[in-house]
Length: 190
Image (tube, rainbow, N blue to C red; front, side):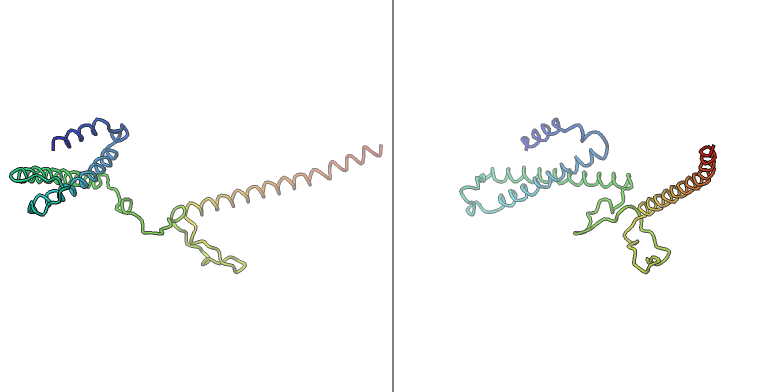
C-alpha cells in the first residue's frame, strides 16, 4: 500500500504542464487517473477474492501468505480497495459537476454512432423550388449547409457584379469607338 502511494506521488511530480493549464485539462487528467484507479480496483478485487479462498486451493505460483498473514493482507487490500473506490467516485462526481457547471451539451460528450458522417457546414437550407431547377433536373440542396449556401450566393452576386461592370465597360468603349474612328478618318483625308 505504501508503494502505491509513493508511485502516485512520483507520478504527480512528473505531470506534464499542459494538464495544469486549465480546469478542463485538470479534469481530463483526473479522469485518466480514475481509469488507472479502476484498473487497480480490479486487481485488488481479484487479489482479495484469492485471499478469501482456502489455502489448500492455492497454486504454488500464487505466492499468497498463509495463516494470520493472509487475514492481515486481506484487510490491507480491502482497505486500499475502498480508499480507491472512494477516490474514483469523488473524481467522477467532480467531473460531472464540472460538466454541469460548464454546461457542456451531452451530444458533445457522447460518441457518435458507428459509420456516422457529420453534415457539411451548418444547418441545411430548404430549397424554394422543391429541389428542382428550371431544366427539370434535381439539385442536391439537402446536402448543402447554411454556410455553403451563403458562400454560393455571395459567389453568384460577385459574378453578376463583375458581368455588369464588364458590360458597362464594353458599352463605354463602343460609345467612344465611333467618335475616335470618325476623327481618324478626317485626319487621314487631310
